[in-house]
Image (cartoon, rainbow, N blue to C red):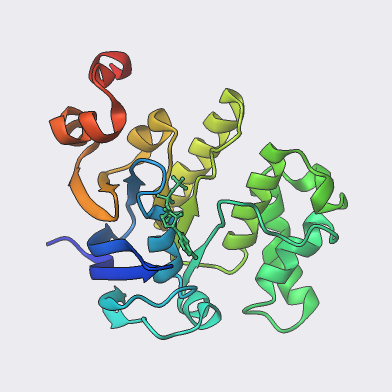
Length: 245
Ligand SMILES: Nc1ncnc2c1ncn2[C@@H]1O[C@H](COP(=O)(O)OP(=O)(O)OP(=O)(O)O)[C@@H](O)[C@H]1O
């Protein structure tokens, strides 16, 4: 029997008078990488906003470790072990890289020395050690994306939601980010990836969920999804299978 860390059922939300999500479902297996793909505006980030507590849906249920979390604040959800990155890198641009990671660690550790004990290995793991004293806002995009992941890891999550962490990266940075995400999953962390970088999302994910115009369009293994005629028409484009293989 599969053990699901997250079960999202029947999520709907309207924003500005438009139905943005309509009865969306998403299940993430514990310790696995789950991909969420779909055209621009499909509602992927809105779904992350709801799961992480930043938006409240009009209907539906989000169960994390079997417990309903709709209605809880993002900080409470983070303390339960579910944190997310933001597509538009947020961070604290005037603080140093180390201070940014420290702020994440201070969620669970009240003293700075204890938080630093968590932060330092994460800085090393994310190859940010050499930049630890640099001001975050001055970093190039590749390093800012790594910092965004580091800030999330510093909250010591069991499920991370990564929103386009490959966006704007050069191929060597994509490979390095893929390696990091795979290592996290190998260590038992559960990961949900929103990603337009198809090689990365298809290479990493055990299961892929496809959204289109606020609805579930398809789901399955990467091999199943990339052969799905509806997905090829709506998102990947005819000939994708040929290109990807
Ligand atoms: N606060 C808001 N008010 C009104 N409309 C919104 C709001 N947030 C998102 N939308 C709209 O909801 C739709 C879905 O947006 P969302 O960012 O969730 O899509 P996405 O699938 O993540 O897209 P992308 O791949 O481009 O990041 C878009 O049409 C967007 O304009």
